[in-house]
Amino acid sequence: MTNYAKMNIGNEGRVELHDTLSLTGAEVSINKIPAGECVPFVHSHETNEEVYGVLEGEGKAVLDGEDVALRKGDWLRVPPATKRQIFASANSGIVYVCIQTKEGSLEAFTSNDAIVG
Image (tube, rainbow, N blue to C red):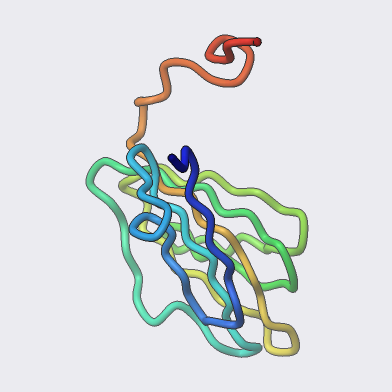
């Protein structure tokens, strides 16, 4: 009996992990945007916050009309109602992970949810 799910990501532009990994508490996607390109829509959410982690490259997030510079190593939390769009810089693509969860749903984490042994 397998008690885990595993997948490998190639060179896709966007990969959502919820179906393949049978996620039940979060949506996780890996996103690659070429230099000078952007997510083709502005969006917000009804109940889900998003956390973006920049893995490679640089760009910006436009959050409710405000430009927020992004570069490798940056992590950004965006509340549900905030309108957002991600852009790669003109001379560098950007690769980022997006983790989406219901705002306010975290009841336990790491040290107070772990069972040792």
